[in-house]
Length: 164
Length: 115
Image (cartoon, rainbow over all chains, first blue to last red; front, side, top):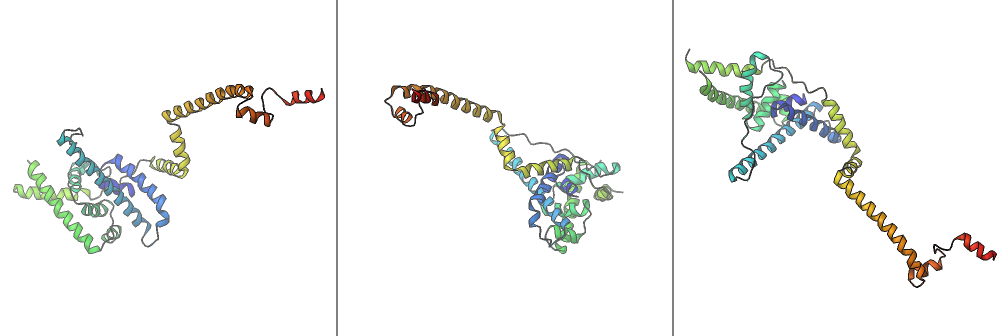
């Protein structure tokens, strides 16, 4: 469950594996701070989600810095082309469609991405998602509705460009 | 069916592509790796010192220092005998006071008293 959640957010198998290790190390170190107010799984999901989002933030920061370096001509990598992500749990018929959807999910804001991943990939109920994200059920409903709207918008743009 | 309707249909099918998704399984060696990292963390500072000392640059630097100290100690003991031998320096005075001059051993002392 930890690996699958992280994989859904970072969309890279190697990075997800390293982050899953980090999550378990954090759990090992901070187990004494777990008070038992929430379910252990909720606590675990929260750490996994935060770790994955932190990783994405630092990756974005590095990308921005690389872009600035390339502008000033002081080195830095060229803008890397992100390859399509193929989730290992997708059946073969939906592989291409799911890759398009994952690209759209990647463009969502952090909180929408977390809610969508936890609900769709992990199969958590809105109540469980709200506990993980430390918010209310209605807030999760709103996040999911906005996420769906944004995904539709993104997919519409994609299919307008690529549909023959 | 117009192209707009076709696009809408594609969008719906794409949004449903995650239905029936199986949970991704982590690498079977993940647990072993986590366990190794936990052990490393548990060993803490000892591991840190060992990894610091085992760096080639640090190891060579330590070796050079040890050899230098050895050399200095050897050279120093050689010259201290000559200092003790001239009988004037504070070292020789101290050596005489405590009977630690290298040329006089307990054996000699016993011989002297027997005479």
